[in-house]
Each structure stands twice: as C-alpha cells, then as structure tokens.
Image (cartoon, rainbow, N blue to C red):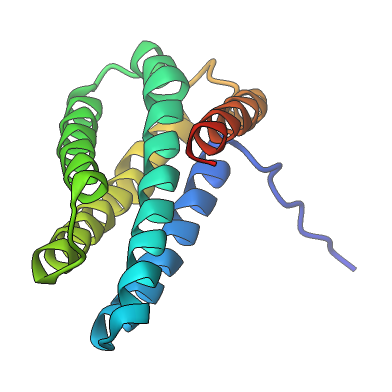
Length: 164
C-alpha cells in the first residue's frame, strides 16, 4: 500500500495559517457589521483590534525574517518590493482603525478595505511569493518556520502585555 509523504510544515505554511486565521476574523467582522446596536459597537472594536494585532505581528515577522531571506535567495525581487508597499498601506489603515474614536460607517469601511488589501496580498503571496520561496535553493523554510514562530510569540506577548 503506497504512502504519501507529506512535506514538513515550513515558513510558508505558518504564514498561510495566519492568513486563514485573519480571513476568519474579517468574516466575523462582516457578520457583526450587518447587525446594529450599542453592544455591537464594542464587539466590532474588539474584533478590529484583534485583526490589527494579528496583521501587525504577521507583517513584522515577514519583514524581519521571511522577506530578507527570500530577497537573498531569489533574483526577481519586485514582488517583495510590492509586498512591502502593500504592508505600508495596511499599516496606515491599521493606525487609522486603532486611532478611531467612533465605531461608525467609516470605521466599518476602513476594516472592509483593509480586508480587501489583505485578500489581494494573500493571493500574491500564495500564488507567487511562496512558490518562489519553495523553489529557491539554499533557503531552509522548515528552520525558518521555527524562527518565525518564536518571533511571533515574542511579538504577541509584547503587544498583549502593552494592551492588557
């Protein structure tokens, strides 16, 4: 009976798990945004803050670890330049969401647009950047997964410590 050997989880798998998690949070936010009420307002703010925290940490581990390693390993780096620009746009929206005083229609619009940015970014990472990373010679994505996971834990602890 033939057995299928599954690839060991690598850096791309960890980053993609983050993508799926944030997608679920955006879906939950969309559901909340359809309902109205005073109690909904605080729930939306809490969920938006969770989205912003997840994205902030995700972007930071990509920028600190994943992108620089990939930049060294591949010739064509324009995709990485685009990814950095997308991160900057997302960070700007995150700052606007976190700094918002009211949870109103503009707040909802900013969270929605952030979700659209992230959807676009995720598609490029999955279909292009991760493909190039996995094909790159000399890039140990399995070891990098551990490095990303460790750094993510540190950053989450930092952010939770300052917001708790």
